[in-house]
Length: 248
Image (cartoon, rainbow, N blue to C red; front, side):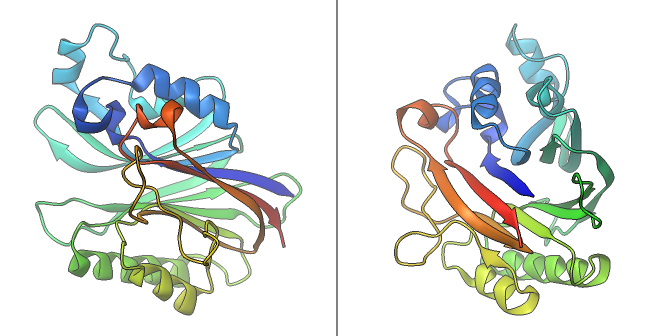
């Protein structure tokens, strides 16, 4: 069983510094990726002001618009809610999502965060694949709390021998979260550079910080790719990551 997964912070469908609305170009580029499962962060579920301002703002939620005809299954975790809308994390899948739950792991009221947990049925696999999409806090204290919540959830909800993918924007430039996930859950960092460190993904125009991650368990990592450069840097302030996996 081979599996192609990607993760991308889409910056609510806007380019860096919110200069241009890029949701249509973003959909085209996601389809070019050709991933089986995509983990998305900063997905706009509703924004009435943008809908009134932009004539070509999608009528449906961004996760549904991006899924289009390519990913028939999708799940959305609403995290930040405000008067004119809400945003959160989403998972798009070519395969059936048989269960989805969003757990509130906010550390304080001003920075709403959630863990979107999906169980996905893959062909010819007796066990379900457990996918966790995250966007961790900007501050170290909040990240510690949220990594602890991920560890607790996987220990509580996921069998020890079940395949797992945890992906998203970790805001973890010190790599403290990664060490805990590796030590406590046996997860492997999929996307590493030649020195064995997580790859750089932010800002997309000239990546310097190691913020976006894909962690796996029960898979062999065949190869990975950081999607940045002229074609991608117009879409978001983050680079996208892809990992090609083989069931171990």
